[in-house]
Image (cartoon, rainbow, N blue to C red; front, top):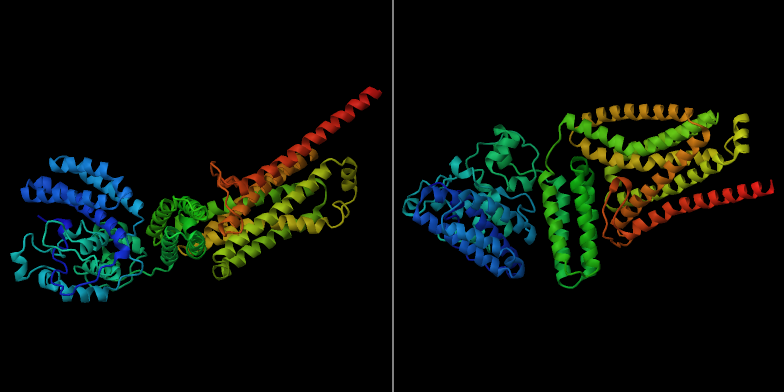
Length: 618
């Protein structure tokens, strides 16, 4: 029977070298061992039941017994999985429910990877030359120099060594499964485990095995991450990229520039967890901050363009883990393992490439999302200036928002080198807070004009002095700051999408510009028809609401670089409105919300009192 679990049977069996134990990684190896055994069961158990072979079924029973023992060796965290393992064991002992056992083993593997914070891929591209050297020196005696297992000693072994050219055998194998087999062997068979081989050597051999049946690669492989390559079978790669690319995907290791940042983040998070376990909470906190700024931030724009929900989860996980470190929480390890799992999920998608149509529509949506707030504010300003018969100042507003777009364009061109890590978050945070100040200034300015009927009459009579001394500079600053933050964010997002399709970004920008122009013209025309007082009041509310949103987002950005402390609250997150479950962002927003409401009721009460006095005098 051809079974993926025994693919590497007798791999390295002839190796004459003994290796020293690495006790520091013993717990991690036990987690990998448990995962590896369950992977054997997941692949082999259905075929063992179908074969009705007593030998095969006995082997499956030994697998589940070994898995139960490994879980017990992990202490409380491993013991938490014992009920599920025992439930699987009952069915395996009776040779029942092959599909259900396979499914439950697969689900358990995913939960174990999360619980153990396991890495299922190499940290650097494997050295295939090293893998070939190890294979020829230590494995060819049983598997043959070409991996076909057509050697005399193979006939004396039961089961026979795997033929790595057999498509049925290779269909169920991934490099990660091969990695575990090299490390732990196959229980109940002549295949020994070699857990003391270095991680790099095991990955080198595991990846090299997949090149044996592939022809020479003449071109370049499509983009695929190490995480994806390590956890995909050959048929899965064919389905994703086509048969014509399989050889290059297996024979040429990928360029991991995009994935390197996530690998850096993962390594620093692992370092933080070790520091936290050793009682160094400050060191753990600093390592987590470095992981975010130097690992995630350089690739966040690309990730956010492709999967914004995942980026939100990553940012929350980083903050939760950092808070656990700062508070010396016993949950630091649990939070850290969730973060590691999310980083690996991001790595799986880091090598994917979006097509022209996808990039174009993503660009359009980003422009509409980022440009909506600024567009509404600018359009409202223009409508008011038109209503006030002050077209000269409209040019000032146009100059302001166009200048912000120029800054965004420059950042799109040069920002990849200038805005990395903390620089980007600090710029976003400072720009948001500056915009808050200018928007509040604009709101006060509008509110004052809306309640000065005498001044409104003067505005209609005299254009040049309509807005008062210095108002031109103020209008420029309002328009500039209203558009700046969105311009910066858009430039950063589009940098990531441009890696996939520059033409898609260009067409998306063109469509977005048309859509936003239509929105400005619509609001400008509708605003002109509204009564002056109504327009001013509506615009004032809009400016204050926008300021409240940007205040939350700006403070959050500064929290992410460690300039503002974390004070979490048991509330929900709603990023579009700048609402985050943290006292340091929410309380300032509530204060800013309360101030205009209080002022409104005070003025309303004062107006009512004056009206009552006039009535009594009459």
